[in-house]
Image (cartoon, rainbow, N blue to C red; front, side, top):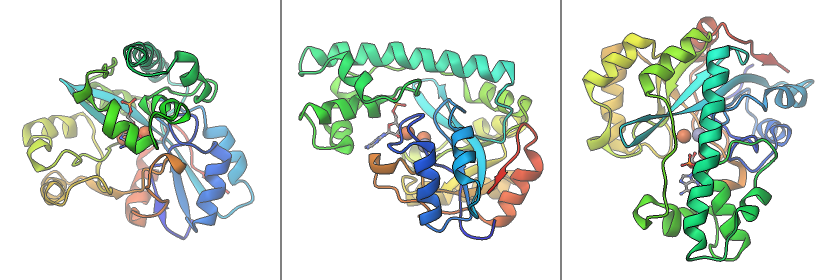
Length: 283
Ligand code: AMP
Ligand code: FE
Ligand code: FE
Ligand code: ZN
């Protein structure tokens, strides 16, 4: 348990490039004391992560990053210590994963008009049963030699401004927070300041999320802008919300490194006290 605490990472169960076991080994190598596995809309990597952490000094917090949407804005919600067998949560994540699949197919059929890419290319880049996302389409573009790496594919092709983009079904943030709490989990808004201060959630909307059970804000994250972070710290004070920090590691899929941002031990203690749907794995 002693050692840095990183509460946001992705494996190949979603859009990370390392298997859950490889990710746990990377976490040990990075000297982390605690790591949360938070794949998009899936808890399927938990068991493999626990097995890989056995016999190490690593503590694994089982989690997930739920896709939600408010109007046209995609909002990510970290959910720690949920019950993976909760029926409502299970059904909702299944619905989101299925919608992501249909949506990825739609994006690829648009891309196919202009680039040498097929759906089979994307399937080849996606681990069996993984939550599909634009990163897998990016990997297919890289494999075809269209883009240099994931970041270039997002910048030059997959950004909504190029017209290939398609949204997918996702619940409202308010409903997602209620769902996570009902499943015994602890909900934290992921990287809420990535679009700059002018797009930070309004005080009224945040108040509603807090009433629904929001626990905290992931303020220490490389993609939150400095001015947005200042506003978010004010909100954390005003609403008595916990502040977390994490890497959002995706293996080779993003430059983010394990432990580049961390969470205070007292905040982790509170998450452990409030999360009743599952237990941390102590290696
Ligand atoms: P999607 O949920 O399918 O729309 O894809 C969003 C995911 O793409 C996020 O979870 C990130 O992991 C990833 N992503 C977004 N922007 C970039 C980027 N510039 N480089 C690499 N990955 C990115
Ligand atoms: Fe991701
Ligand atoms: Fe995210
Ligand atoms: Zn993430």
